[in-house]
Image 1 (cartoon, rainbow, N blue to C red):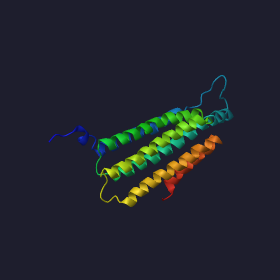
Image 2: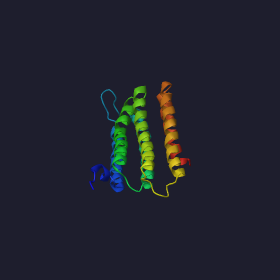
Image 3: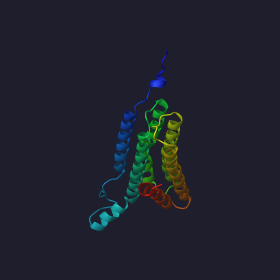
Image 4: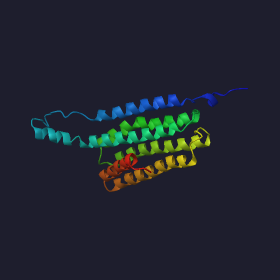
Length: 205
């Protein structure tokens, strides 16, 4: 009987988890590259403590974007690992779903840098939110596909699946609400996004 490549490709959950951990580690590390030590210049000399404080305050948009994105990637890393723990194996389609998810992870340093540089610009906030949306959508597609394809463990009940999906959907709705607040003020948007992350960390759904 003929065996098709697409039926045997991408079945290793271990390799999928390994590349995921690597990309998350690189992405979370690259976030810090937008944080630069204040440098004394002709236009902004640093000779006193007050000068240094002023230069440090000028970094606050980048610091805010950094901490927001580090928490964000932490939330999505936990979410992906939770899903993988409930799968018996992968297949080619599921692997590609997670590769697209990892594309979103790798874009996070870019969208974070854009937000940090233009934190009061709505476009920068919308690009950042679209990055979050891509991550959430792909995780939702992942659990739904795995369930239909029979790739989940026997002990993974419908209640567990519902819990995984509910957490993603509610979070994404709240992220979208936060992004919508940029029509008023970008800092309100960021505050809601951070609040959603804290809810994901501390609240039992």
